[in-house]
Image (cartoon, rainbow, N blue to C red; front, side):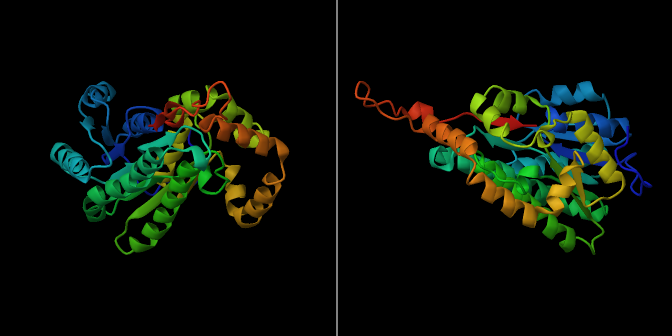
Length: 309
């Protein structure tokens, strides 16, 4: 099912696409959808079984490479392997990313902030840099994975929201810089996608669920990885500059200047929201008791990171 009307201007048949974080979630679904549309695909991922997963997708039109987006040399090797296998590279999708465990900024470990920005911002830049010359040579396309968190309040997940706002700015600027080269830049904004990251990072955290519960119900509708993949593929075929899914978020994005200010003001006086954030803060900095003066155990301040793929 196509999500966008209008004529296709970019035929994906025969095109070669590199997707980072391509083993599962949005990345895996996008690889499958592009293969269905007759593209050839390389998935680059940290998982050691990435080559085997790619082989299961398609025996000849899918290639799997183990690569860390924080390492430019590994991404350069992935690009070289792609060109060696398929003879070209037309599209790069910078999909790999991390979501740190929910916490207030005060209780977020420094390592979580550094790693989130290293993967979600520097990793995206590294991905684009590694593929750019080939994409330019073929007047191809770049896909950047932002989020609705680029324009809604990032309370409880500040490093992630910061990273997605940075990706949005990267997309806006690249779109102008690469105009004369004939390269399109598509920035994707999704809400809650029903992936393993949501199951482990949201559904298994009652405080996060309660915080999300303060938002309007319409904003919490989840989409499937398959529908997100269709949105990306449709956007590529039409060389769209942005994809927002579900579409209702387009209104919020367009009105973000006024709506954001009003929503932020409301949130600062919403006792339910502030109480939930206070509990989130205490989770990272437990209050010592007279019987246990050392309850501020460092292990409670080192939340695990969830992978988005």
